[in-house]
Image 1: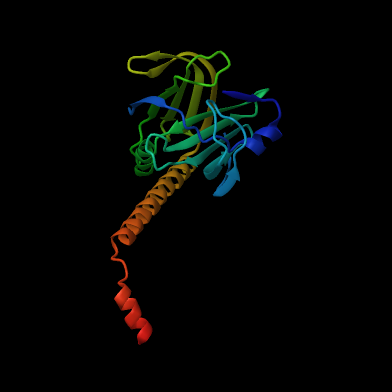
Image 2: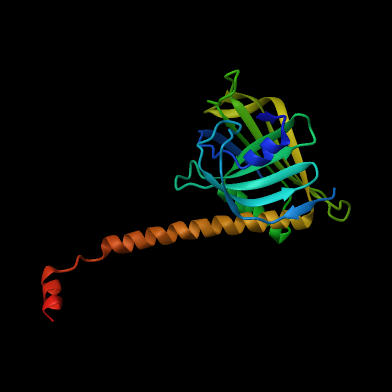
Length: 239
């Protein structure tokens, strides 16, 4: 959890942190806005809920309202353990302004996106945490992501995305349970904006995966190609 008293700092440092922490996970599947569509690369400088590694992060999606910012960043990695879509939520109506973050697994993000686009989405909650966090009090950090949908016939802006961050407790084989919620930011989205988020994230993950598969196939093809025969090279030279 981080607090900023200066909104300019938030805007400058919003696309922060690619977190590579060991997280235990469990999944439960069950306003007027102005929107901006961007795909840009920024250099990360600020720290997130549990730390960062200072590298470029591509902004996959962003929604800005008069009081909130919601963005998705590329935190994908060849190692599935560390491969994430990072969600940042900022509440700059609160003083000091607050930003919370959550790392969503790409497979879960694809399922949620497909359900949203197919009109079958009913809601999604994801629990994560870091047993070894960078909190000042040394306690584990717990994070909860909630994506909810109300009846569009009754609500003009039916979707909401909430990230909660707080002190956690290690249970079982290392999972982190929320003990005390300390920060929470909610962003409300219209059906159009939620579909925009879904298609942006889904297309980006698929393109990233396709590029990695192509790179591996090309590398394997080069590795299997027979080495050029010296005699053939001499013959070609003589010709």
